[in-house]
Structure formats: C-alpha cells, structure tokens
Image (cartoon, rainbow, N blue to C red; front, side, top):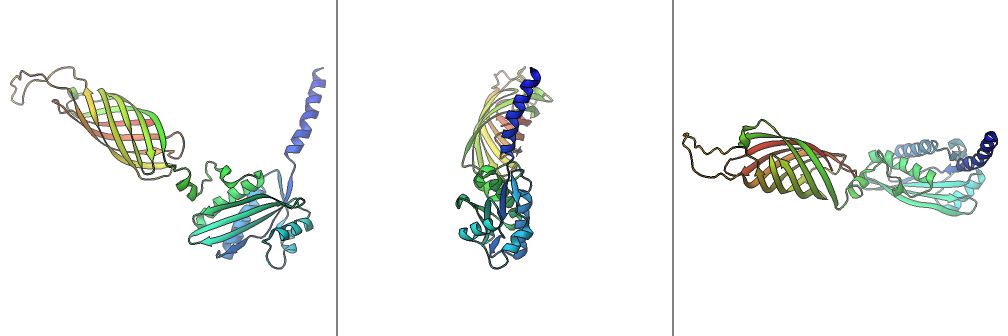
Length: 316
C-alpha cells in the first residue's frame, strides 16, 4: 500500500517538475551601442550570455549561429527580431541597446515572443559608469530569465550605484534600537572605574542626518535628543553627532568638602543638563536591521561635575 502511494505521488510530481524546468530558446541579438566603445559592448554581451546560461529554464542559441544569420547590418527592430528568431527556431528574441549619456550608460532591452509577436518585457536600466555595467548586465539576465522587471531583482550583492543613491537610501525611515556597554568616568560619578550602560533609541533617518530620542540607564537615568551626521549612504556609514538632555546621576555619598577639606553644609544636586559629543559607525546601513558602535563623551552640569566616556554597541 505504501509503495502504491509512493508511485502515485511520484507520477503526480514528475509532470509538474518537468513543466517547471521547460526551457525557452532565446536568441540574444548582437548588442547595439551608441557612443560606447566596441570592446565594452562586446564584453557586456558576453556577460549577458554567460549569466543567462546559468538558468536551467533558458537555452541560448549559440553565438556562432546568431552571427551567421545576422551577417549584415544591425537588428534593432521588432520585425527583424521576430524574423531572425523564426529562422533560428527560437521561442524568444532579445534586443539590447547601450546608449551613452555623459558618464552614464542607459541599457534598454526588449524580450519578444517569436510566435505571438508580443513583447514580454520592455525595460530600461541605468549604469552610473562603465564599472557598474557588469552588475547591470547580470540583473538584465535575471530579468530576462524570470520574465520580470529590472527593479524586482534587487538582491544582496547586485545593487547598482544608482539604486544605492535613489532606492536604498530612502527619503526617510524610522528606527528603534538598543545598545549596551560601559560608562567610564573621568570626573565625579563617585570615582567609579566603569559602570554598565543600557540605552534605547527612537531614531528618524533622513538623507544625511539621523535625529532621535535616547533614554538610558547610565549610572542613573538619562534622556536626551540627539542629531547625527551620516557620512555615507552605503553599508558602512561613519557618523558624528551631539546630544542634549538631562541626566539624573546616581551618587552613593555626598562629598560636601571643599578643596581645602572644610565641610560645606549644603545639599548637592546630582541631576543636571547633559551635553554629549559622539562618533561611531553604522554597519549594514542599507538594510532593515543595522548594527552600530557608538563612542560618546558626556558632560553633566551638576554639583558633582560628572563627566565620562560612554562606549556601547547596539542594533537598530
């Protein structure tokens, strides 16, 4: 009974599996370029062919056969692509053009169904420079193989420079995070060597800046607003900033003696306005989850003259 059930499932699975790996024959027509060096366009075409060959659902008409058919002139029109696709017995024809625009390279490509003469894809992508063209052509291959738009194929490692500036570096976003580490006193703080610190952040990031609210336990309770300048839109983002707020510092004793050792009959305030100067680095800055290292010098304007360095690591 078990063997019979296994055979039934196997026969049901095999047709579906075969359907999923059905290959489409594609003729990649010679890339036409405008204002681009011949060697660059040929390299771009070679990358496109290589990347397409990695997909199991794609069968590429050989370059030799393609160039034998396209022996004279260029094939940039849909009618020509359909005609050549029919001669080569392909299912689809791919037209690709490279156009120079200053330092940028505009990549335009059209994927056509040969039998129905319908356009499957009409896409355009921008390479900010020649060096970025390799990544763009790899993304074009993914788009053609999966038959989806260029923008849908953003993956780790294939983000182009234009997207790094315009997509991943969004207009604004909100972050919440925590960090932990140690406070190292330089003055006051009951002459402690180090004190554990735990802080929570509510962060609003817009272009080159991040502003937010910090609430933390750092030898007492502190709350401040802060602003950071972000030096980079990439995954590794150094920053500098300042903070201003209040710090209620915990003190275990009251040092009411002046510098001459004379007792002063007054109550000392442990709380006061706090000013901070910070620097650090955000890692994985373009992702939804960021890691960061923060180094800060804080001054609390109270009767104890509390000052300290704070070193923490955290997540946003």
